[in-house]
Amino acid sequence: MDTFDAAGNEPGTETIETRVIAELRNIYDPEIPVNIYDLGLIYGLDIDEAKGTVRVRMTLTAPACPVAESLPETVDYVVRQVEGVSDVGVELVWEPPWSQAMMSEAARLQLGML
Image (tube, rainbow, N blue to C red; front, side, top):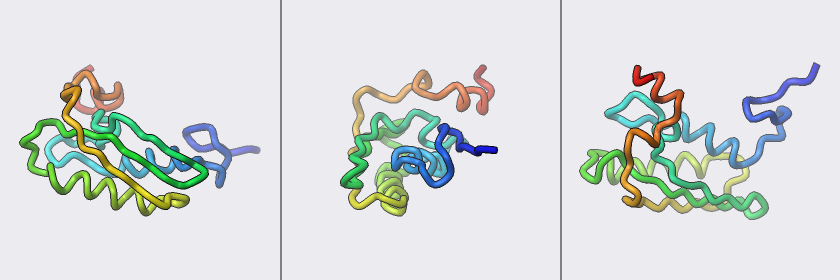
């Protein structure tokens, strides 16, 4: 019997993107009990599988967020630990402004918004 991960990959064949997203889902916003990926704080991932480079565009729930300095550093550190990643760049952006509409359905369900 074949086994596959949540993305449909055979064990051991996950892409860097799959591994990066899995790790981003382990980072939680300190004020909202939802991971930053499902919260919609990750605006984009630009990944070059061949080179192992990952560029992350992300935002925060508000510019005055208490983790404005530390959360991007945490993302950088966690993504660098992913197998196959050789270089990481994290860009903190404010446009478009984050809103609850950016949250995944799972995050809205988790927060009782559905």
